Each structure stands twice: as structure tokens, then as C-alpha cells.
Picture (cartoon, rainbow, N blue to C red):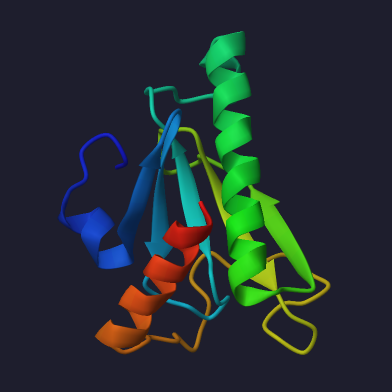
Length: 134
């Protein structure tokens, strides 16, 4: 999905930016405000398929995105998820959690309900706020 940037990707998320070793996207469903995906810039289906250099660069990007998201939405905790059962491209889910918010103290949901869809202006503002901190 991340290699092709097709219609399915556009329905789920929007690009924030490209970093040295990854591409960063913001989920349209903002049930977890600030939820992003950091997708490896080079194609790999498994983390161990990345070279040591690629992995180091990728993890630096993940850290950078976590810091930017934290500085934007001020979560109690950021959860990270690396699955890949259905999407064959290495990517981390960056999921900010708030006390009293969805699934705090538990595992985040891939498709949380009810959906929280921001207005176009709010969504673009959130993208810009995260991008500015990167």
C-alpha cells in the first residue's frame, strides 16, 4: 500500500511529509488525535529485511515523528505498533493516548469506532502543526 500511494491509502490517511528514511502519513480517523504511520522509504515486508543502515535511519525517523506528535497533541503516552499481517510494507503506527480516551491502558484498535473525522481545515492544521515540529 505505501509503495503505490493508491486510492485505498488516500481514503485512510494523508501524507504529512517525507523524511530521510520514511514517509509519514496522518490517519483521517482521528479517534486517537495525532495518529500517524511512519512507512519505511525502501520496500521491505519484514523489519529484518532492512539493512542495519536503513533500520537505523528508519528508527531515527520514527523517534522524530513521535517527538513531533508529542509536541503537538501532548499525549499521556504514545503507543507504537508494527504488525504487517495484511499490509506487506514495514511501517510503525504512532498512536497517541490520553487518559480517559479510547483504549487508554489497553491495545489501540486499528479501526476505532466511532470515527472522529475532523473538518478539512482542522485536518490540514493538524498536518501543518506536526510538519512544523519535524
